[in-house]
Image 1 (cartoon, rainbow, N blue to C red):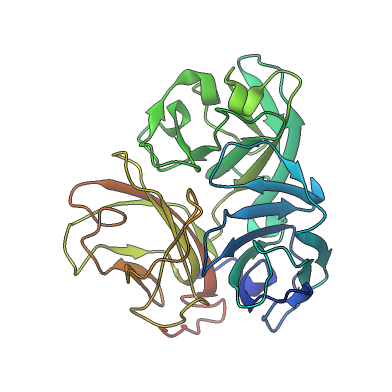
Image 2: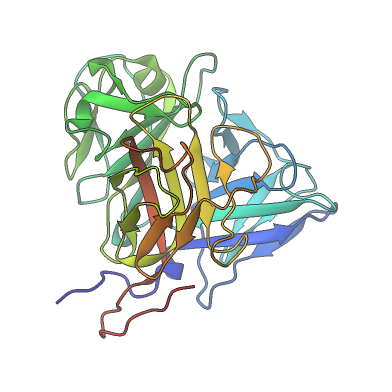
Length: 334
């Protein structure tokens, strides 16, 4: 029996918390193995600041912000370098300042872990195929138009969003429910070699640059699923097959709730798992919403954000450790 495809998740994903330094600083990841990140998503915890995304494909100083529709900015005063086991930040208040607290979610781009970064130029033509390098069908695709701002939302494809996910999209930067429109994915499901675009300018603007982040599930390492809330403080349990290091949850069936992110480093124990929200600049919340378990996560609140009765939620989760490794050894709960 194959328990996991990846015994050591920290080779491909790590969470790092750090305190600010007004002189700037090199941040070293905590894992026992070195990991050179290709995508770093930074968020200040103790004060208002947007979530900053940098990647090695667009270039170190090219920055996008998850809670707005702004085009890509060039800023040499925030994340300034990618390293062999971390990254470097300047003294900007959004990424490093005396007294500030921060978290970084870091991914390595590799088909082995099911993650690919693709940049492309749009053509505003329906049924446009964009190649990727996963060699597997993507389960989540997040796209941002890099060149245009006003009204150009972050678009999200999630394979469990609805019964026909290729007809629908969500927006990472807002609280809207799922929306059905063929102008996004041209009503075509992605394949192991391409994803297909419609005519919408947010993901296929003519002559405009875009970036797409694509993930496919890897057993014991990543899971991109959905669940139905039960409206009980003894909430829905979601099996992932691993002890999560990161979980992002979005209520998809109804508008009004954002993208709530939990991880294994900011508090480090149950039930104190405080949320950060991708679609706002808000500081870290204080609601204890979920438990991170040895084989999944469980809602511990009746909140509409993650457990309203009868509502549908989609999630992205990445592992700290597989529930059972390839030698048949189980991991413990937190």
